[in-house]
Length: 286
Length: 311
Image (cartoon, rainbow over all chains, first blue to last red; front, side, top):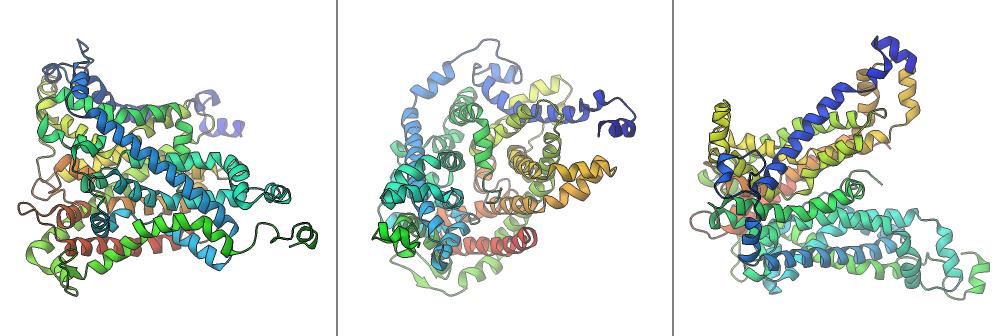
């Protein structure tokens, strides 16, 4: 291939393989992608006036005052804690219910079992937002307004289709010998789930977890309509109040935005491979 | 059901005893999914035939739809939001997804260095909440923020109330959303391109195909299922997009409803109540969500058929 390419391009292979136009394109987009994030972070370390005189450069005097203001003023820790609780509880339940159902549906291959499976998978295509009107009334009936439980239920339901899809396919793909060995040893189905299946599906659980983590942490819609009470708010909901409250204190706004975005960005950077695999999992068909 | 096994085990053999056993594993998930997703989704369709809320609900037939499509005030909002959503969708299909494919072709070039680095960076904006990017861009695009500096750099032409002008606001919001989400199609196309067999590409190379021909005659047709999937995801997320409008233009789709999307219209009518009265109309809201539902079915099923058929 190399000789042909060399002849065709009429220039040396070495230069061809440097992919100069490709690198120019990628570097340009990297700048476009990073510049707003850069503005977000550096401006959160500037003084109130410095932002207007020097919007693009690094701060001449770095200050953490904006962060102190965010943390000391209001219930920032409470919001943060609520967001974490919502993410952890919802993810745990999605993984638990999803893996049980995946284990069941991987073996229940009859007509009804297949039907139930497709019923779940259909949910991947439909946004739960269109159920909002009825969900609002359900939460009213169950008296779950201003309760994190309303968020748990909605996020678990929202996360189950992809969980069932990925985990059923994954369990189905496991070698059957593994079960049969355990079964011959006299293990019960529930024991096999716990001691054989669960350890084996860890990679798939990670994919499902990451796939759901980002949308749950970043969700605005359901906290906005279910939660009005101060001590039940999530971080994202706190961000919505910025418009009025600190409209003139821009560095403080930048600091709060940075604080709400940073946990996910850092988590992403520390395990980007799993993130990319997880977030594109819905697309790569099983 | 080998006899040897059932002899040593008097209970039902193996792990295949039919649905009666497995249903207990599926039931908890099924209940949650039905109660908080499937049932409310379907029941929202029924509610679109009623007005009022629990306790004081009256059957009104198709009146909510008639209002939505023909009432001078409501229908102007609905068709406005409908049109805007198509503009928003066009940006994502023609810009975001085409850029994503271009980036993916570049990033799957095996001899290129630094691909991991580029991929990682391109994906960063996808991990940030729409609410956060929306506010960030709203601040950055505010003439107060960088206006004086840009003018002193001779770039005064860039200083405009981009989000305050009816002519530009929707386009700016669409571009911000494209900026944020381009990483998703990029990564999906990367995964799709990596699935294409090496032999095929080598054969094309030996046959003397240049890189454009390889792309157009080999990679592109083989990517059709991924393209279909991305088109569906884009369609579904655009037709219920809300956060970006809420963050950058208020839920009223300011200025003058020029950025109103179906998602924000749904929020105003069904959940929050219209400005300035503030009383939501669940019936009309349910009619809007049913319309979204119908549009998704009409858009998604043919796309699935056309692109996911043969595999």
